Image 1 (cartoon, rainbow, N blue to C red):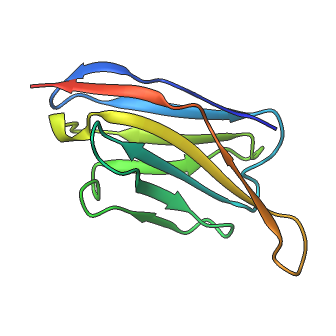
Image 2 (image 1 turned 90 degrees about the vertical axis):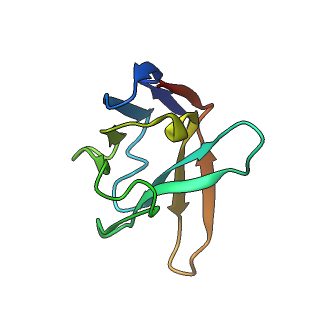
Length: 120
């Protein structure tokens, strides 16, 4: 199973982008998903997450501006990004944590990343 991000690009400050993470299977159905980002010279950080039950959480820096969601098939994870600022410039990575049994055994998947550049 692979994850493939799309939707990155260059946008002016104040603009919007929607990132899409596609999976060949229903990877995100009832599983944990998330979006991370890594700016140049910085550590990778969690931007937004969605639990197996659908609860969402966000980094303080993006609350009120970004929205994470998934489709009903569980094959696609989205990140809607509004009111973008230059500080949002980074490579954005899609993430999935798939639990395979009741003991909690899981594996993790990462996408290859998509560049988001916000100009001032």
